Image 1 (tube, helix red, strand yellow):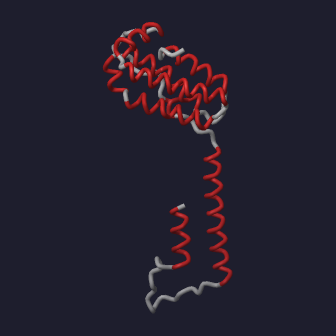
Image 2 (tube, rainbow, N blue to C red):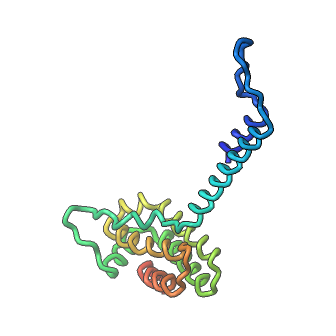
Image 3 (cartoon, rainbow, N blue to C red):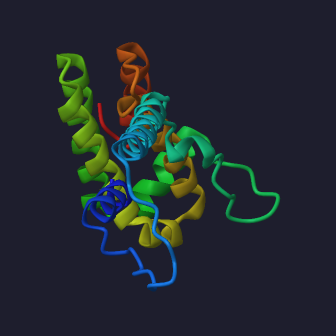
Length: 184
């Protein structure tokens, strides 16, 4: 839009036109030449708007889709099971953090069940922010448990914020995460 505005401004104001010397013959701008120029400018503008509208209509993918599995803590280590991750989290993660994650996940599940997609997406963003804000402390407390939880949170974020709603998928991933966090 800024480029288009600049082109229109310069076309109308002619502030970018260099003055010609007296010995150079200037071509007078005929009405037909002006109409042709404005027609070309209008066609380019329409093509630009069409291109922007088309690219906006394409499906957007989440950055989480390219993330893949998180790196393991040590080479050759096996990821923990859900009970092992829960036990490690209870022993090593602050209870206040786990309670916060449980509350946000339960709220998100309730909003999904209610059909309030925008509020559920906002709560998913709250979960992501809380998780990211505590990442370094939790990861250093127990990398294996953190990795297990991270791999369960990523599908929640993708499902709840998807452009194509799938309530059963959203509920499934939330119901999988909630007991891992120690919730009901």
